[in-house]
Image (cartoon, rainbow, N blue to C red; front, side, top):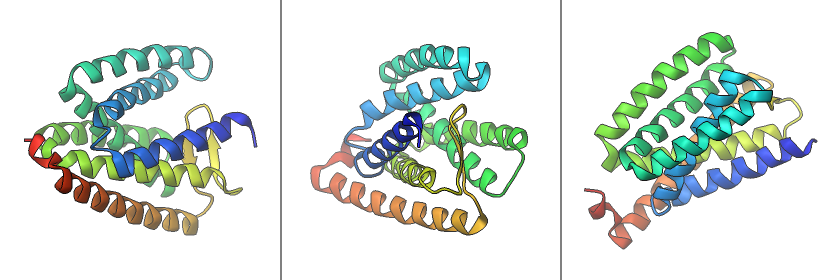
Length: 196
């Protein structure tokens, strides 16, 4: 397995664990990371493997800085990012064509971003748990020999529908555990009051 693939697995699982179980306490850090990740994905999508990576890094730094400086923008980016990643994961697992899946994912991502702003007080824990669980599962899927992984777009496609179903179930289970843990921690430490 190539070093780039191993790095993807490591950071996907690490970022996923942080997001899933500690998303609210680490929220400002994770918002900046979501801005960076969204910029990186957009840059690679626009420019491809070569110049797209450079554009993505620059765009990622800019969007990460904006997200950190402007929490509402950061919450919007987080919602957009989660909407795109989850939609692409589900649609590609259902073997939808990439162009159609990307268009639908962008629309769902924008809608998720707007919803996140309106319901931010309730959505932060919910979305960080789901996005973290998705990262953990995607990182694990890449280790399977039947999984198709495109290092240029970071797209992860399960090898067959049985693996996809198990991945979706595992993702939901991890997300529920993450939400429960974050809600219990938030209640104990009074975090929810500070969200109002």
